[in-house]
Length: 514
Image 1 (cartoon, helix red, strand yellow):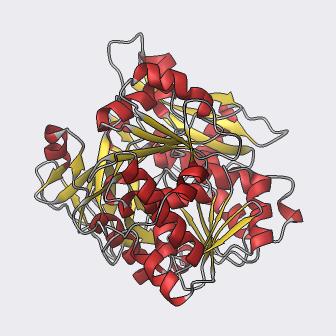
Image 2 (tube, rainbow, N blue to C red):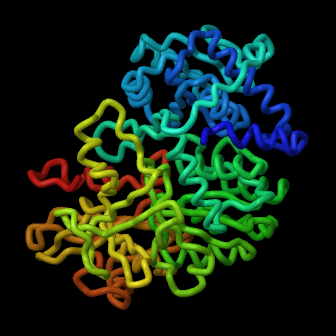
């Protein structure tokens, strides 16, 4: 398969159906196909060759959607850039991938001088924003208008589709190489599940489009000829307004976004009843938050997807019925396209109920890390992706994630998995969000420490949190200390950056948790 396949099918069968909605701009599949063919032609005229990387640095838009199709149409390779990175981090990813052509919108155009200083090989910059084209850039619409459409290269199969850089939660980011087969396999598994994408889908892109979670929604919607609704970036009110105005049927949100949305004072003022599938993932969610979300989206089936960029991105799914059948703590079972095994350090499958490493096999496993053969060999062994996540599987095949293996807290000789503590703390009515880390302790080696965001107008003490947690988990797992903050640091993918939370405690210590 190939990324542009769904566009051809929709333009053939429903050419006048709405393909994209962005602000006041609506485009059909017929229009979209013509514009994609012209943009691909313009890229070739600018010197983009077979397999060259073309990057984009921008907020969500219909032009982002066209970029995702035009680059493979031109037989080139995608490189969506993390919009939350600094110029130095962005330049690193461009240099590392050998990218010389970049699309940039109004929000990030001011960053260009710094990018060019760090990456002088950046030869061509295309302005894909709404305002006037800045000096030193080429105009997106002008390029499309001047180009003659070209035939689709139909780049596909095992050919490289994109280099997708990880969130950089540890060290320098790695470029994950995904093929067209990788991405298509994961999306087809979502369709086959009957839980993620259904005919007639109107999918809201509120999560950042550079991230694989949103890309999964993008490709699944494209396969079914659905409509893409975009807002530039997540905002609780803008998200609710888009759902209500455009009768959105599905979206993907990370737990941080869900919390901000369902706890917003305006949530009761918007009609969210059109949403039928709400997929969440990227980080654990507390049972308390999930319950609030299910009340706000009363007509929606909640679906949790577990995976990672290296799996394009989905491995397991907790379906809507599972949410109602007492499996809220689980990350679900293997998707139709995926095989999941829990292994010990020697690569042997462990008994059910035993914690080990979650290992995933299937045609969605990445090609490897860009220019990092040793790290590729360490992560992908005999075709199996070793996720680095600790978990166990029950007798019915449900996977339970206990933590990143490296994030495990060892306190007084006992292993404490932060996800379990976070679920307990988050169930306190005064807690809006929390993260649990291990910090140095002279007596215990490490002690369990909770960083908490309170509900508006509420306060908590460590004594309250400990007493509450002890009602739900063993006493040694309860936080011994807490910090109350206004917000938790998150990556561009919406994951809580525990590294940043640990930094103040561990940097001066000989031992570090990384």
